[in-house]
Image (cartoon, rainbow over all chains, first blue to last red; front, side, top):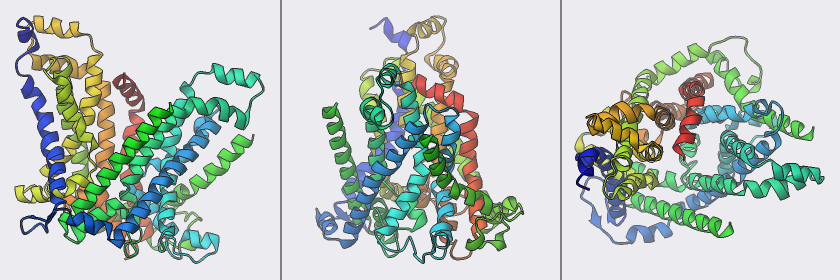
Length: 283
Length: 269
């Protein structure tokens, strides 16, 4: 140890300090502070006043929160099924085709757009009297009524996210062993049966990861809702993340906003834990 | 054959909105009409439209700020994270794993848990609506991933390289700066690109921690423009803005695709 010490240097804590301080000061400390604020009444001007669990009891009786929980659940279920399922479909159909990358290009392009760019593209399409109305010959405001507006945004999200899921699945499909597939082909398996009994079991672990990522992303949905509807009209398309933002920075109810943030964190943590546990026991 | 047919049909559906974006972003601002949105106008007014967006929302300042944030913060974050990884793995920092866990643990917090204290704390510290404040939070968010990837990378580097350099009398800092940083260039680049993209596209921190046009990042500024689409920003102007500000991440990704794939595969062993 004594012979090692000069070789390995003495200034180690100085080297790890910038990382530790940035993370502790700007990520951990705010996290703990939010947890504390969720137990207070606080408007940002007067000092926080301790109220115990009152924010949380209010939370469970708040009809707006019920709406945003429902919307968040639609987002979670939707993101776990649509972009992942269609992404897998496109990947399986195209991964061993000649010039497969060209068939995938249409799905990759939307991924380049940021959330704000996405809203620019879709609001003229979805708006009342917009392009979709004229094409379908209907007179519907797609972003108006709940929960149809959440479903419409979910489809927009699928349009954007499909490409990246396809990419992940293609990489996965190209790296699975060729022998079982060849053997199954020789035995006369093809199409659906080949997929169901040979490819799918091999793809399961990767699918579990992609679905897990979609689960967490779905719970935290904010950007696309904010830019397309800002949670409205009224509050009918809010997600939990949007509710948190509005309660805090629009209504200046910092304590209540913090309680929503805590709830979102607990739900995300719990869902991830249960999902991981199920995946571990399943394999 | 059926496979190709399904792919082509689905692909055409997916191309529709992309086509509308390109055609209408290039349409002269005044001539947009939902009824003829599918028909190209024959004019090419993309740059004029973008110029109008720059003027109306003063996006020039926002673009400059975002460029600053998305370059400086990942650079700092990657450097700080790499130094921590180096110290933990190569210098064998005592309780190194716990230090690593502390730093990497920073990735698990949803940003909603950070917003209120950051807003209040920044206001008290005079960092609210300042470029320094934005650089700080973006850097902190980048550190955990950088530390994770670089720690993995450095644990694959032969220790004899370090020993030899130290025997020759180089300081631990010099070994880091002159040897470990350069050999990890591909991993550093991969992390840089991921973080550049994250910051370039960030909406929530810009929304919460900034106010003025000089400090506000471009996505937040564009989201503001968005709520005005009904209130007067012509559709082609909005589309041109959305298209042009999405370009840097695409160009960066395409330009570094090879390096990116290599950096990630090295970083994941």
